[in-house]
Length: 549
Image: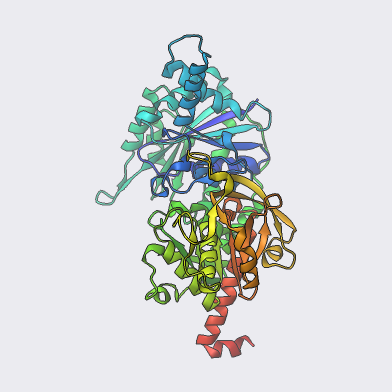
């Protein structure tokens, strides 16, 4: 039977519960244990699929087509395993299930209440992943902050499970903040004391307290926290700010977080964590041999979490190339024909990001045109690929009013059109083309050389597609459809063979990039940016070219 670890947070949001949960999972996995992580979110949306990125960051899509919280991306990137629909549960999904059961008469006329019916459904889902024998440990991250009204049913469910499960089968890790007051020149433990007290008042007693801090926790401070929060001193863990999230597992290993958890869960595992590949990745990340500047052309750039998976994919690909990737955010809404050279002139490559809606698309089209004409490495994802198609149609095919029916429903040249099966859909939630689909690659194409195989599977999240009525016209003009869905013929990849590096994909390759398996298009894109940067440097400094020879 699986054992369960619950991760809660206090004092403030955005402390990094997901990173701590993923780091603990990585350490346990590195010892040979079978581990998975799930996230319980307190908001009433059934899933994050209908949320604006400004509200909740990116929507992470799993292999089975679940639209989930971005923390599931961290779980996959750290553990190098796939998550699923079962790994992310919201209050909305819980209530939807309970209400549907009530309508079916499943409760035999009883009054349906938060306790026991809502909490029973929460507990059922908390235990679900651990009941089929696939995992030794299930880590559950509880979203929100202790004390929030919407989090109360989840905390109550944890309280009940602590009582129902054998003592050695569950533990609670509580993440708090130890703020540093610059004027007083000291760390303050009172917020942590209040947070633990609030959690205890709700009947849940943490076994381990992880303290986010800017300064080291000296022994007397740890002793004070342990005394007032009723935990062992060894269970007070320092989580200092790290230069990268990928340093956190090693920091937690030094703090013996995994050892303390195994001791509490009565797991006798004497294997040392095997983190050779992880450390090799960090060495390459921390000691790059070159540097490139990549422009991220998007319209949600004020919130970095909106493009979280893309940014992490750049980290993975940069390490693979032993290259520091400096990402320059460029707001597409403010790109014009007059300033495009000024905004993009210092780049070694540009990525046009996904998105929805009309705002900022003309700026994205201008960015594509600049990259195409200047020979600048280009990578378009989802909407970014569609903008590349529109730009080519307007400026090469001569279809001056070419557009997507998402932006201009009545466009005379809908080179991007709503998918046929989407035309009858009226509800928004969970109805896009979602999850993993196959893609056959054209032999001899850039895509085929990047992947090194004839067929791949990648994750999707879209309603609009390349309009195949225009495909012959595009290919005669030099834009090649190098990847297609084998059953529908949907164009998945477009590229320009005569360009140094120009590729656009309808799917979201960033969703499958991990530390151990960086996404190959990102890896090759950064490699092309390095080549471009070297050429620019040689033009600017002929002496450098002679020295290289």
